[in-house]
Length: 336
Image 1 (tube, rainbow, N blue to C red):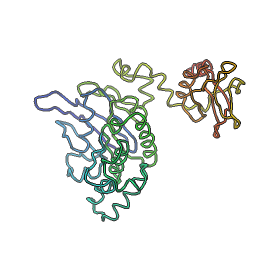
Image 2: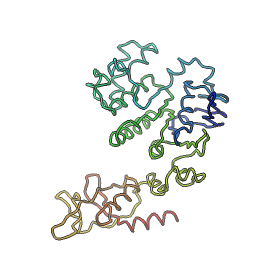
Image 3: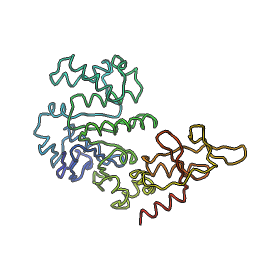
Image 4: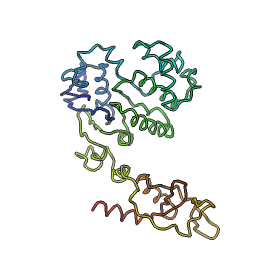
């Protein structure tokens, strides 16, 4: 567990960056710091590994004050991922990942063997090992950065806007990879982002900062969306928080109607589109399964040319439909 005990940071000649912050970041979970620019979220993150020292208060890891620990040893036990990966440009991908294990006493052979396994774990094929950072795309560089942070198997990882420098498609891929890795590894992660959607998607706990380094609210994503503490939090999480909250519930219990004749299917029973005229078949806009979220179902119903979301089974065969008005009735009944 990481603990902030009444932490204050005041810069000489400047304002207060962090103002009496007291927090507990749970072990094995991802805690995301989010807020407007200049709100103290990155300053707070960097106090965990002593890149910045607090003016007053304490930061503790598993009950031990980081201020009393050797900086180099402390940082070797904390993985650190930054926005542009921060790779060594004149070292190969493999040697970038092997750097910290070598510093911790592993032989170069042992470190490189472990690095190869990590590259595979973050979704990079072995042929990337001999390349240099300049030969990689932005998303690939970020994967290497995550692998390097994991190389010493640290119990704690700090991530400072790790996915903000890549395009939306790559970012979505990295999000999926991150969630998969965290499910497997269960690290204690503190992450900074300016994107509330990213915070809600990746965080087990979300800490919203307001200007002046003050914590506005701490909670699970569901709690923040359902019960924002004040107008600032409500504005920050967005007026569409009701729609966003549907991301936490699956369509497993959502009733469906039988597949109508207007839905054109291929020979295998997979949906092709909606027949809206004698010679007019319009795309469905996508399909959902019972494991998908209610938010996806709502999006599909809105985007559908006929206002209907199509459910498919594991083989992609259409097995039911949900009109938007039935979805609205279902959600209203759930609210009670």
